[in-house]
Amino acid sequence: MKHLLTLKDLGPEGLQEIISLAKKIKFSPQDFSQALKQKTLLMIFEKPSLRTRLSFEAGMTKLGGHAIYYDTRTSPMGSGKESVSDTIKVASRFVDIIMARLFEHSDLEEMAAVSTIPVINGLTNYNHPCQILADLLTIHEVKGELKGKSLCYLGDSNNNVTYSLMMGAALAGMHMKVGCPADAAYAPDQKIIDDTSAMAVAQGGSIRIFEDAHEAAKNSDVIYTDTWMSYHIDKDAERARLEALTPYQVNDVIMSAAQSDAIFMNCLPALRGHEQTASVIDGPQSVVFDQAENRMWAQNAVLVNALS
Image 1 (cartoon, rainbow, N blue to C red):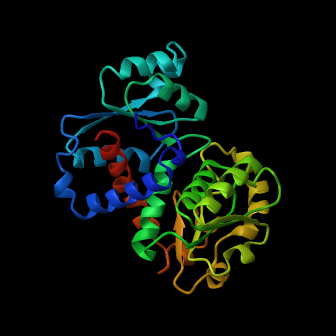
Image 2 (cartoon, rainbow, N blue to C red):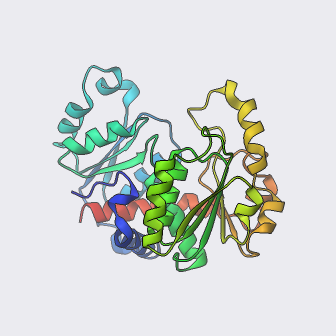
Image 3 (tube, rainbow, N blue to C red):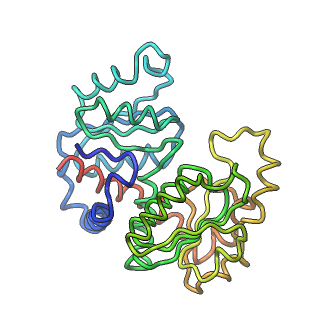
């Protein structure tokens, strides 16, 4: 069973295989146009989405298959009238693969435990592996071999994107630097730091945490940030978050500290003037829309791999 709940499920070799397959599909899509003929993907959404829905649905069509959009707000599972387990046991009888975008990672683990078909994590509060596969594919396209490259992430670092990025960088043998406030509300959990550091060392990479954004950015090949106002953030928390995170804004000064040919990434959505300036995200070093497109190609590789 080829579930993808976190990037740990792939391991270093599996990660490289997915990136290699994604590149093949992207550059020769006609060779894979019937790869998933008559296969059906069920897409379960608890959280709103632009890129996740469009990339999975369009991607499944390009592979010759079909995707079903299922909004839990209008379902028995979402209303609490049917358990997660029963929902997935039924769905497994009708479709070939499931992608779920959920609030709680524990619900995803419950799905995988009872499913008789592959389950893919489309995002949970703990992990977002498909996004990071797209990120690593993008870095590979621009920078070549991932091993040994330096990636700097700045901003709120106690979230699913940061944790997945730490895992992905570690498995790829990259050197990842996280720049964030020392406050536990914004810093990675120590267990995540310990786990990913051990994974990184095993692959010749490293994970380091910085409180100073400029120091974190120094000589980096990639500068990465994410929205400070995720879907779950209360509007009332905006002022406090801006005050805490403004020192980690990616601007021209931060970009000048990185390598001269460094690229800028944001998994989107993005607010200009918050986590990055307009001059950076709309500038020549930005690859954010290539990164967004690569969600589809990376996920197509995951789908083909899971159903092969």
